[in-house]
Length: 191
Image (cartoon, rainbow, N blue to C red; front, side, top):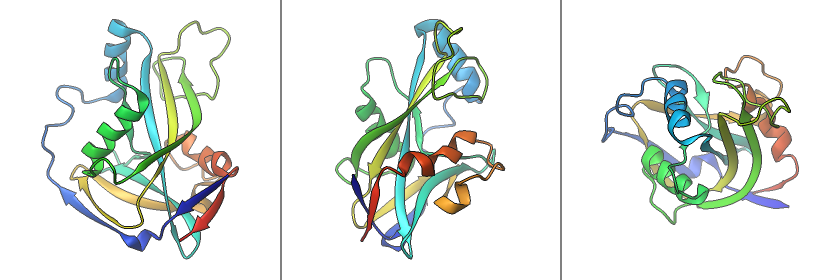
């Protein structure tokens, strides 16, 4: 399978003012997951693998919350009755201020399970767990050849090369370490 990825320098990134206050009364994501789980059961979320390249070296675009200093893939919680693709469009429009049509949603490449209300995710649901607290799905999102994005002011953008991620145990999001392996089934065409 082949993926076309464009130069990082083709993209311009600016900051935008947040239209809404921080996720209303929710200050902690895990608290939000607990609240949703208590009402609706398993929480569904999506994350986006967004790629570019610098000098033919594959990079992934990650968001870093300025307050928490935590790197993560763009994504969020899927609303009740919402399809994954619609959630991705909504979330990217909010976080990057990009309009529909400026990106393509590609393959679903991974599914992770949160068996407990903790930071740990697993690529399987442990046998002793009857219901996951959260199911997180990862999708490839392809950017257009050129674009301008406005990042929410509470976040900053980081472009990390695969080599910086692979086997780097310093990252708080341990699942990031798996991205190079997950993406290894693709041949990249650098444009």
